[in-house]
Amino acid sequence: MAVLGSFLLYTGFLIIISRRSDKKTIPIETFREGNRQLGAWTIFLMVTALWSSSLIVVEIDTAYRWGVAAIWYGISVGLMSLLVSILIPWFRRHHYVSNSDLLGQRFGGTVRRLSGIVIGITFPIFALSNALAAGAVVHVLLHWPLWVTLFITTAALVTYIQFAGMMSLAKTQGLNFAMVVTSLILAGIKLGQLVHHHHGSFLDSPRPAFWHLFGIGHGTIWVWFGMNILNVFSAQAEIQTVAASKTRLAAQRAIWLSTGVLILITIFSVWLGIQARVLMGHSNQEGLMAFFRLVLQHSSPGFDVIFSVGVWALALTWCGPLLFSGAISVGGDVINRSHSVRTLRWALVIEAVLMVLYTTMRPDNIAWWRVFGLTLRNAAVVGPTLAVILWDDLNPTTVIIAMIAGIGVGVGFNAWTDFSVTHFVWGINPMWSAATTSFIVLALSRLWTRRQYRSALGGMGLWLLFAILLIKTEHKIFSAGLTGLGLLVLGVSFMIFAWWRTRSSDPIDTTTHILEPEGH
Image 1: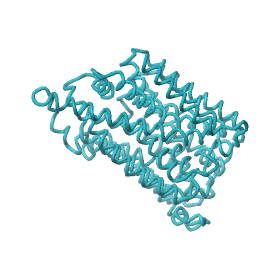
Image 2: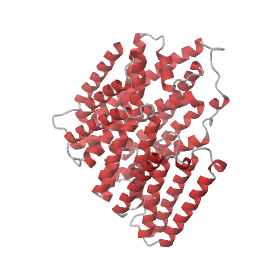
Image 3: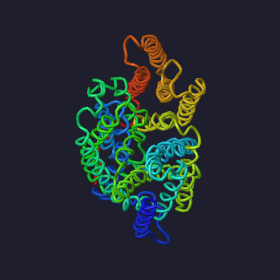
Image 4: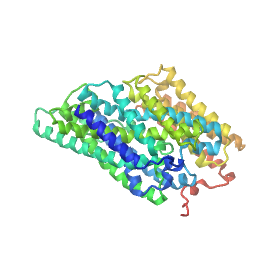
């Protein structure tokens, strides 16, 4: 009961902090984007809290199963964040609110609503992993079912975010991050003591690949980098945060500092996962559950309370920005009430309900949920966002067709294999097939509408030829799982080729336009 009481007290404190930002009639600009007045320190805390909460969960679980190579996931996230910092001037010039709003400005209401629906559906999926981490701790301590913990988590988030939106997050993420770091330090001390106490024959010695920097396989590492590079154009929660900064330079400095801290957190989290694996030996438990059991066994009530609140904060730091970000797209672009704070608050409730509902469907396959979410989002958001950057005058109908084609391929290929977790059409994860389809349709249409018929047919023919060769020779040339990424690279290459062939008729040289200073 002490743990439950600490959860309630901590949540109550977050609500008090949030209410300090609340007014009876808060302006929509303040609720949605902090009135674009966030300082560098606030952005640093928000971005670091967001990505560290995701990294900690992934790194501990992956390092437990695969060892040192888990560090590459954290490095790929750091690279993604640095690439986002390069695009900050462009996003700020376009008065970024959300990806669905950005696409709607350029391509019209249908694209706005379709992308908003996809974002609204998928962001609760992405929030699941950390909510489940909090659920695992509560299950270990109190033996509560998962849905109860998720319900409490979502109720807490909706309660304190609805007061002031972005400003609520700005005032609470720093405290949440401090609690997460505290719990990490406590876990490190506890595992260090256990390793020292049980040194020698009591410890398990994992296979040699466990200690190898590439022990998880080059294919998986490249997939991590590919997945997170796509995130550069669709990491809506982070982009919304940096776009709310006072100045471009403040946002960029915050991200640069945040990236350094994220690498340190990655290293420490990998160490925690490795220590847990060494101590547990050959265990059938999931990495995160084994880690929690080790940390909480034979610990004092005070330790349990502090560590559990830290994990609770871990869930809040990740779920909060994602649900709020999804709510902005749902309220502003799907319901089409972008100037109504009340609508955004109700949209936040919708996002929270969706997150709880997802756990009732395939609760044991969270990894599948995440990939399915990426499949839909990448098909509907990444390609069109890249098209906005490359071309100012693309036909909206083309974008709609590309989005529908990408989503159709992603869902269709999943249905073809009965939504299997491990079996894919041609051995290619639908996440790659869906995004590639979107790229190909956009590039082909661009060339065709600019009367570059030979380039369109020749480029499409070459893409098909290389795609068939990739699929046929997968196991001879590539590591397992790399064919899909190879197809994606071909799709991006075709899109860049289309830009190059039609660049002379573009009104703006987008290569320099992206990096052009804001002028203030």
